[in-house]
Length: 328
View 1 (cartoon, rainbow, N blue to C red):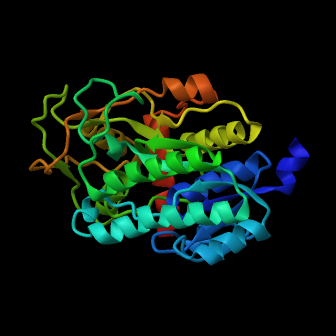
View 2: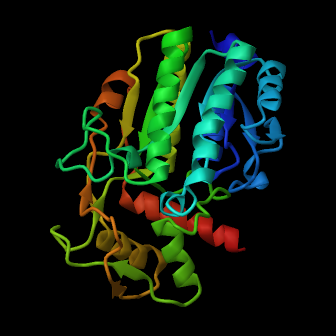
């Protein structure tokens, strides 16, 4: 079986991005060959190692994707490529749907043409919207509140329906708040995410802003379920192996820790790790920010043998180290 894994490969769409590049390395570290397809709209060419096959292009290019799948003897796809900014998606709904929905359709067409029948889909906690439960499970009703969240849910439906029609083997992993770094040369460069936003403020000598401190939570700030990106990457390895082995697999898994961390706790950890003393400025609440979103990863633990291992300090310290290296 190990020899077969070495001969075949998995395609990671969006593999030059922050999360995708971690998944590629996690695959390669366990002997699974990875191939990257990325248009570099938000990824970084330097995130792909020199020995990893890299194809620059869009998942909207069906012919290119089909040729890539055939040329590299691909047996499965990890599909991350897409437009990932929930807030901006409200202003750019058509772009969001083209990249995330049409892109998934064209990928599935290419997979069918190339005879590739395994896929791990990068979904999102945004499919849940603002849940009214203390702990989110896979059974919690979906109610997305942005074109981004809607596009991810439609992606899940497309893959499910294609599976019914063709026997495609699949699972969708719903990410919660992904942070940290597994390697010093890989970092989160999104201008919209909490960690890089705070780090950029600190590096520039500015005081970070905390949006709202009057929520019904223990310290008044929003509570989220944070997952270290390396834990997330290892979850993809587990899902891919289960798909290839032919074992039963659920259609959806929450990749979550089951623990809530407040934004104030994050800020406190950042003060400690960076050694930069600051007291965040309290700004107004952001529209649509729920007070608390925490999920259980129990189903992933039971089926995939996966669990979140790295704690808050690991998340902050690794992210800061990678940011400092990127700064030079």
